[in-house]
Image (spheres, rainbow, N blue to C red):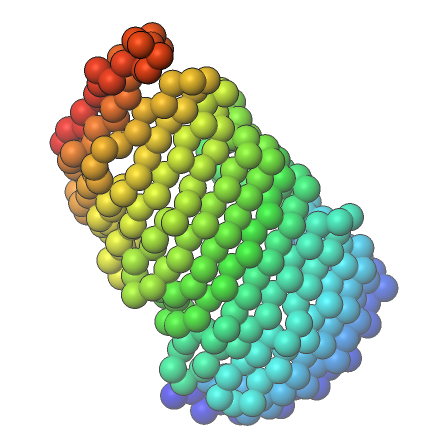
Amino acid sequence: PDRSGLDIHLRPNFNDLGLLSRLFPIPALGGRLKGDVSIGGTIGRPQGRIELHGQRLVVGDIPVGSLTALVAGDGRRITAEKFKITNDGDVIDLHGSYDVKKQIVEDARLALKIAEVRTYLDPWKALPVEIQGDLQAKIMASGPLTMPGGKLTASSRRLQLGNTVLADIRLKATSRNGELRIEMAETTVLDTRMKLAGTLRLDNRFERFDAEVSAFSVQHNDLTLRMPQPAQLRLTPDGNLHIANFVLAGPRSGLKENGRRQENPISVCGHHV
């Protein structure tokens, strides 16, 4: 373990953070920041307290807004008692603990509400497609830092990925022991409503995954196609995707006979790729 001793006491009070970026080779900064920093212990097991308050903060080309942060460490765990960013109605709120010795996350909770994600993603020029729209999400997590268990709920009225518009997005998922269970995922694309549920299993190196799609349906106007049985997907380290038992079935036409819809099915079958 690292036994390097720490003895840090600072009281930052910057009316213009831009001064730091002019003095040091760091991304452009802006806004005001003040706080109180007191850190002891060792690098491996820090002790102390960090309290920061910022207004009109900017990092590079990304507007951060206001920041309130209170982080404490007792040598065993580091706890974010409060970490909240607000910017013109957008909110990112985080709290939770990290056990330094066990290297596990304890009761971490993240809530975010963003009116336009493009505001924060545009400066990332490396993104393959332009993303814009609103996003709301809540995440709860506990367990190993590399693969914690937890719950996720997310929604969006409209999210655009390049030229593709996803409307009325709803997502609910849970994670445990490397298994991600999608309890509900649904959205509307080109007036077509799609719903999905299933389970995704990842290895520790994220090189392969196995998935079972337990439910999938596509609805357009009065026509609905759905899976009559679960389908399996597997991605191997060599990049091959294997698909088995993927079938969509529905009525052959919208015609009715004796007041009932005809039940002659049409099917789309999946295969190995």
